[in-house]
Image 1 (cartoon, chains in turn orange, red):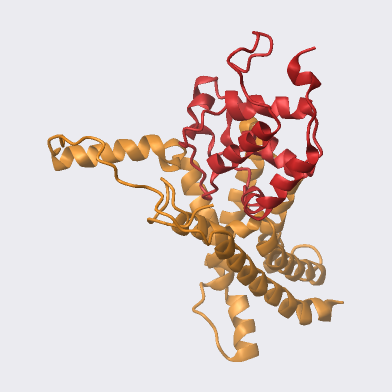
Image 2: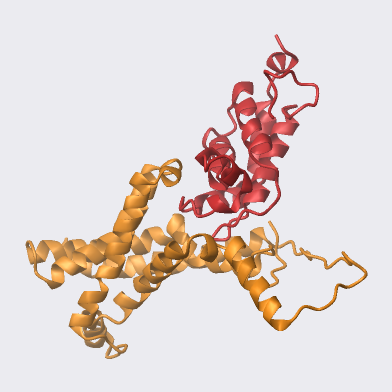
Length: 223
Length: 133
């Protein structure tokens, strides 16, 4: 069983992950094939108002950001979620242990953080995960829309980091913990394209390709 | 008995409508991470003492989300319930902001279309007890 988990299942999970992402990307582009100009700049006021001073424009922009975006309404959550999502990529990619395995298998590896630094970084997703769990349980508006599925998604995301931390510190039975670490990582890869964890991919699609007021670019695809 | 209570619901028609947009709507519904960060972008949520039922995500999950969950097998009572959610609790101002980028107004619009197809919509001549206002 252990040999299967650390051998073929890793390849299977990677394959499902990549094929799943391609399938979802194709699905997205097929569903949003219809293109149209979403926002037309109508001559709202033919008599142009006098141009504002640069400082006033910067101030207006800041006030608009403050009022209209999540950065303005939830600065703490914006920082926490940003750090959390970045750490989900950075920690496994630049972990020494993972890169040694890569080097042994294929003779290639990425640049690695020193072990103590990676160990410290692992606290980031764990603490952020604890904050998200706290919000789910105690914040009324979050609890109102929370389902069991949300707890499960959080568990799938955090479990590889928690078991990895335990494995590094050799807490509990090492063989069992490392087995769980590999297994939870594989579960995350397999479930990512087909569950709400798929926002990893769709975040960029929705923000860049779909035309809306809040798009990061002038997307022309519509629902 | 009011006119609305005697009305028949065509579940086949609802199923057909749901199926037609299943791909897009299910995709959007399945990617809502239930973070509730869209809440403050809704002015109705803000003016109703931050009542969660006015959150954009709440409105979508409990209207269109449930329609898909029930596979269109709904009754008039259910449609009347979501009528309040998609008309009274939402004015479709399109100001809701989803951090993931989900198009919430399009989902509310679709729910309204389904309700309207069954003759369920706010009427100016509704009595006070039936009023959606």
